[in-house]
Figure 1 (spheres, rainbow, N blue to C red):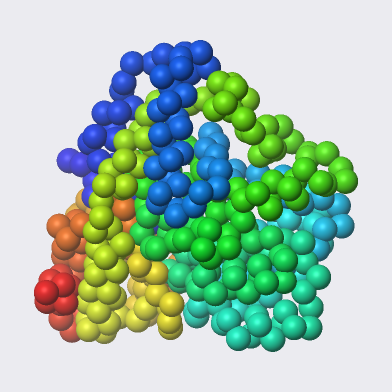
Figure 2 (cartoon, protein in one colour; figure 1 turned 30 degrees about the vertical axis):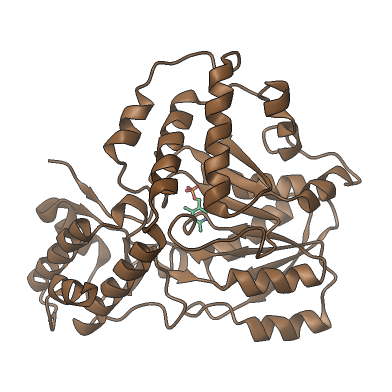
Length: 377
Ligand SMILES: *Cc1c(COP(=O)(O)O)cnc(C)c1O
């Protein structure tokens, strides 16, 4: 029996996307039709991101995108502001340091969205940064940060903005150009619901200029975003492209571009999901700025994640997620992103959660799926 994958990435892959992977393989370096398909994929991503800037796809997971952005922009002695209220935000600092950047952390409450006014105050005192990094959706904690106001603020100080939106692109509104995001980072396996293996990013003119005017060379070839310049005009890829992965991404992107209801659906399903958990007497990890792509819930007292997860998986065939870092064994997460974000899949998941909690002796005040369906109306 097929498992119901409800994790916050990888997500469920639609049959059309899986079939696209089985298309005949041509030589992607030489086949001009493939360049057109590749460009069409980038153009679709531009629509999703609301940008006219360049979009690049790299073969490798989301983390590769984060590292490539840091490697390309940052050199020895560069001052970088890492704005963080969670695991991915904090982790950005490690990449910055690998490439010689001097990191200043601006830290937020881990159960809340980043507080604009505190950052505003901070920047009045200290704003001599070349780059700032931040995360749109903190996937482990289920928070979506106010990237719009923060990036506009950073931009007003001339700071280059790098945003990890791996877990939000497609599920939350994102307007790269209007919000002044210089580099936005995405991944194939989250809301886009394509197989794992690709990362993509938009790169602004300003970001390119910063890369071109570095004092030292970019340390890396695969990590160097400048090697992509002119790939379409010159019909030349810097290295052989993973053609099957690109076919799948192309199909996933065109499904998403044609899905006009996706942002509304994510919001509606996420709100009903949160309501169902709260009515049942469970506690969300987030106090505000709840994500519409992933919900993080505190495990009831005395419930052990691996025991709980084992029942979900073995008795109900539903795959949800725990978390890592400071959240390890403290929470469980439902990934209602991309193709996971469907009423039927949510109802199955919530029913399984009811039964699992019952079995473990946790009192559920009202069946999760009942509240969920009521709230959807
Ligand atoms: C999933 C994710 C990444 C990338 O992780 P991979 O394991 O490389 O796919 C980066 N940032 C965030 C916020 C994510 O959710």
